[in-house]
Length: 131
Ligand SMILES: [Zn+2]
Ligand SMILES: [Zn+2]
Image (cartoon, rainbow, N blue to C red; front, top):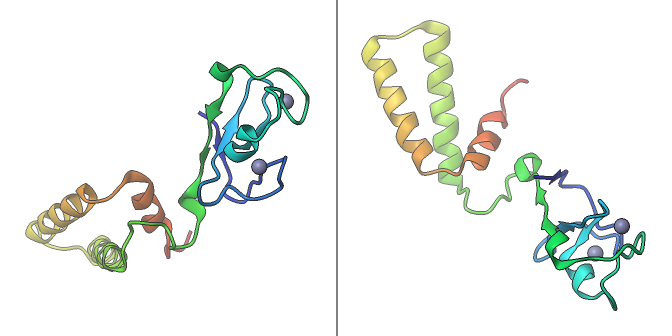
């Protein structure tokens, strides 16, 4: 599946893929937003004029993992919990800890992860860490 960088924009209306605008890709390889696709006067690519069959239209995912924390459904409480767990993990890794402390942390991490979507977890974990 094609993945676009969040700063990509539609080649037709030159606007970013925000809100209800979703990128679609067609057989010729060109990508533009679903609104431009729907407003085409005839089923031809606005960039290269090749014919568009409805089977060829594919939704493209925008990689939102690089966006700042406006990501919906990730609450501040979740971010707080993530940071706290991350700090605890760092402390245990740097200074060591008892088996019970490790077990407790792994349990907490597990139950926190279950409440999160994979994409958001990746963002939270990369956020604020040195590299
Ligand atoms: Zn567009
Ligand atoms: Zn095209």
